[in-house]
Image (cartoon, rainbow, N blue to C red; front, top):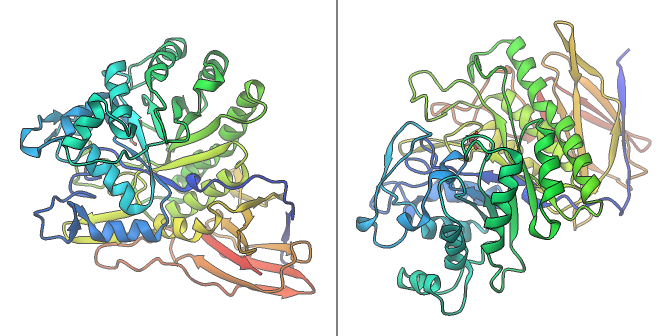
Length: 495
Ligand code: AHR
């Protein structure tokens, strides 16, 4: 007799919209993310638009990428944006002190990034330099990007070939201020934040800047408490949270060659996101019951040892079915907390950490995580449908995790989408959903799965893992029964 779990989905119009920005990405000057990833330069033989690879542009457009965070990460607090504008031959170099100590020529700068975002139809999210920059420098960056009238910075922008402002809405005020952003205490950072935020003018036409505070390191709840307590809410658009799924920072394990123990530990760390978002939300609710300030999980994803033989500072790792399960589970958590989580950025977009795209010279592949993001793009700006589930357990070595992670939404066309993840590496799990309650008559499905947990897309076999049609369900008397294979991600569409 098969055990069946009941998944209840509430058909209500009172739930929040799932902000499309939850499906955001992050591109840092780190390893081969920008240079040798996105940016090959306009003299490259690889087809490109203003130096950015066309295959990457196409792939990200298909993903409906809603926003892109740049230039860091830790790099942001060393970056001086004025070094990356004007004629390339005049730009100074910068040594990337955090990531491999490489010398960069600043050939990818503000214009390149903001024009790329326009091409992608994505909102830019600029991370300002607080750690080693000045208030004036960040205020000038806002004026350069956003001011339409005559001013020193808009004149400079025009001189550099761009007449209209880009109207950048999302601005980070430092990054990881508790660590690489300056090793500040929460109290000290609050003072810095208030000062920097004051001089970042809204100018006109942006509909208001969203100023984002550098958030806590995982479970540092005191950090969030201090920010919420001591920053006037009208200066605070968002509060960041960073959380990486890591087995052990001293022994992170291989991205491909891993045991079930390592899989379990990675998922344990990843699923902690539920607790983190819940507890940080509770603190934010205390100071902001109307939920005006967004929680922005602007760095999340899996962090393993770098691929053997690659530069340890470049954070290049492969991406297997483990990453697909991790991405699907995490996105379900964000969807279910859409009342407060209104932006998130997977780290990182190309060739770094849990990338959606990997490149090797002219070749490009899409990872299992890419396909999860693609399947889940139907949740973007859809109305959340609250779920409740008493998940069966995935048990290993005496420890347990919830085996089923789910979320649901209804889009503007009236289609219902249910995303289901089976975290269990061995056991199929079955759920039952009442369709009458949802007014659904017919269901179709797609699945991302593979025969082995460690399977991945390689440059020799780039399409091993892709979404395929899913038929492992049955509808009888208005009840949908779904058999979810081990370590798989499913998207059901009901109408
Ligand atoms: O994403 C890699 C690094 O992780 C970022 O630069 C930093 O913010 C975080 O510690």
